[in-house]
Image 1 (tube, one colour):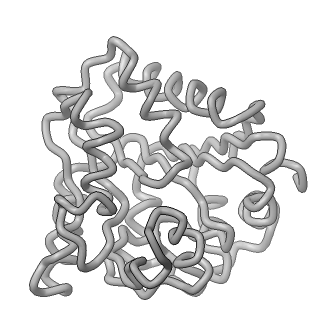
Image 2: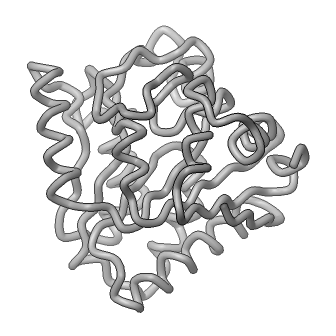
Length: 234
C-alpha cells in the first residue's frame, strides 16, 4: 500500500486526478471504476475542468440504491451525470439498475458487465465502519455483485442527502469485494477524523471480513489518499 497524506479534500482530488491522468497518457486505461458520495467530488471536479478526453473510456460504478429510478435526484446514476458524465461523456457508463424487477438477475447482469469491462483503476471511498462499496462488515471477501442490507450507521451517514432519514433507501446493489480486488489499480480516498479508525484498521489491522477494506492489504497496487484528520491514527 502506498499512503499519500494531503492537506484537504481539494488537494486529494488533484492527487487522485494526477494518478488517473498519468495512467491514461500511458494508454493503460480503458475502464474506470467509479464511486459516489461526497468523497470523490473534488476528483470529479478536476476531471471536468481538465482537457482529458474520456469518450473512448468505459465507466463501471460500484453501487446503486435499490428502489430509485435513474431520474431520481438521489440516485447514484443522477449523481454521476450531475458531477461528471454530463460534462465529460464516456463511451459507456454502467451502473446497477435500482428498479430492476429481479434482484438476482440484476446482480448476474452486473457481474457480466464487470467481466466484459475489466477495471483498470478503481476509485473507492470508505465508510466509518470500513465498508467499501456497500460491502458492510461481515461481507465475504469472495463476494460479487449482491443486493445488500445497509447498516444503521451507513443509513445514518447517507441521511444528510435526504429530506428525512425515513427517505433513505435501506438496500442497495453493490459490486462485491472480489470484484473490487480484480481491478488492476485501486485508489482509495478518505477525509475527516471520522474515517481515522477505519483507515488505521485498513492499513495496519488484521485482515478480516469484519473490516471489509482490510482486504486491500492483499492487493498489489493500492494507493490511499488521506487528509491529516483521516491519517491521524496512523
